[in-house]
Image 1 (cartoon, rainbow, N blue to C red):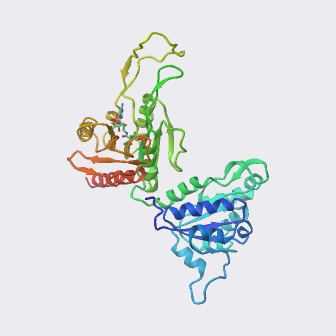
Image 2: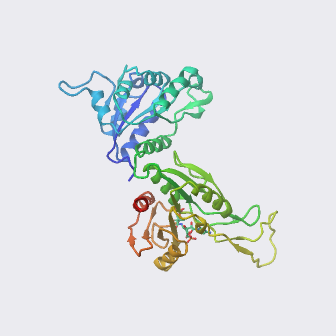
Image 3: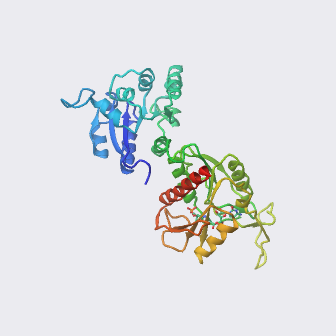
Length: 401
Ligand code: PMT
């Protein structure tokens, strides 16, 4: 479950054509378990109806600041008080100015002035307006106040011109909201390094040795650690999935590159989680040119790759994975010891819905004291959550020593 479950999100919508995209954001936040109260500036209601948001959130959307039932607390004060986060998307140029100057003129700026919750602001406007010194100064004021500014992105604008001013993608905004909500989580202040994907070892310019790792397990770990406040570095061979918002990506391809990137990131880290499927061997030589079809049989000469988990200095919490097709627990336990790990996830790749490329996973967590935690099949994000629960316990144990 994402850290949005049961959280109170106030979503401020202001006057930009991008307001229609915010209906999707409101829907995704609601689907992730958040209670979403939409407040709209009067300009926003010219672009999208409050009814649209009510349809996707199942809750009233407010655009009239005087619409408080008699005897009730003032609407904006009530919303501001219970908000866990205020997200303004899209934030048009006028709204940025109102937020920066504290001009409480309509529902969004009024609620923003009243709340002490973290704020995520997602600008969207024409690039000329965005680049204007006034807009840039307003953004600076907001940043200095600790507001998270997300976007805008480059692309086609409503004017038909190309430029910087597009509202960030809904997935990006969701990532920013999750990061902001997790900022005081149980991994706040901790640096977590995660590896993901299958390494590629070139045979020649067109062929390589690799495996079926999609990177999903590693990406889920990176997202889950970010959602709990960690500062996350993701060393990944996968470039087909967008890097989770707020996570620092080190793209790599070979074992040598992954080794270098992981060891460099570990110098400053508290935790290393190796979810990557690392090639044990690589071709002894990489042919400069494409190898031509020849005899009926062709033996490839392979040399062993370094097992760099062993090179990671002591002091970090080290978690490994073992994808096994037989003798799952015995093989995993052997790797736990040989690689001097604090925890290993024995990954049953023979189970339905588990292992390479799936959205779910089936693992047993093994620790050096002999403890075995056999987890049911669950989403890779939830598996990541269970691993991180153990990581937090281990970090607390180290801190007490
Ligand atoms: O990416 P997905 O499609 O989501 O799939 C996820 C996964 C199946 C790849 C993942 O859950 C998993 O099990 N990864 C480990 C794969 C594996 O079997 O690794 P291994 O047994 O070769 O190595 C054991 C541990 O040592 C791993 O943590 C590995 O990253 C590390 N290792 C391995 C070799 C090497 N040269 N250096 C290493 O550090």
